[in-house]
Length: 156
Image (tube, rainbow, N blue to C red; front, side, top):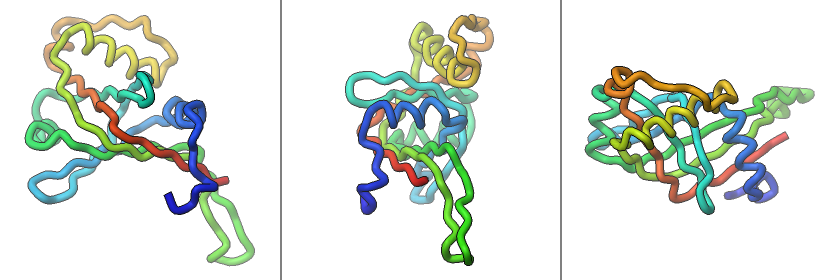
């Protein structure tokens, strides 16, 4: 990272961004071309790195791309605030962000799917006491990003 003075090194700081983010930007490669989607997510911290859970329909471009190449990059960002200056080149943006690399796994175990969906619901509601109909689970593909590396940055 070029600006080490802005780097988030502490696990609590990284968790702070993860816990406040309301979307995950997921970058993939579709037959040599970049492909980016914005998704809802949930997470848990295991060992030294987070694991992210996403959900999707079982078919579609994203699923096709991920089956061909499960390697992804993701980013999350929070706390956007315009920082004004005396002239245009002195304006800036305050923010907190994470960027990570990982591999997507297709979750097929029903218990892990439910756990991933509960984590996702907790991200947005603060609750984990949800149940899921078998019919809905059958139509939903839960995706797990096993994170290899993650870095964070804060400005302002």
